[in-house]
Image (cartoon, rainbow, N blue to C red):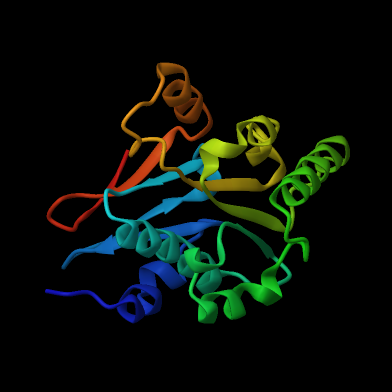
Length: 193
């Protein structure tokens, strides 16, 4: 049976979840499957089809938006304009951490914010960074490697696994930064590792 997002987000289990940043992975007849982004290392989204990658990214984003207000959550979206539907960009605009549009400038402001939070023992509001082509920004992203302790979480999408030639170092670096994977199985089910 198909499960609609409205069923997931209106479920008692999701609404009453004590998880600070719950991500809904799906629903069976008996249970809602959630993970908490605050208890995870940074998350990587993988799928062979770009449509599935976008859908997983939107599932993570919508899970967060249903649970938080603009005071408790800030969103950073790094990617090409066609990576996110215009309607979704309008929805997340009030949650924006920054109005900057240059990727390097945005990442540097996040590194600065991470440093400030570290020095002042701050963790709120939560900042979730959705970054497409994450493998192209390793230098600045590595500076955010331990940013979860300051309430800054990375959700990366990379084409590193789709390239015909990938070095072991590229793969290793990517997996060090993004320890957890979210992907779509061939039969369309969501997987988490």
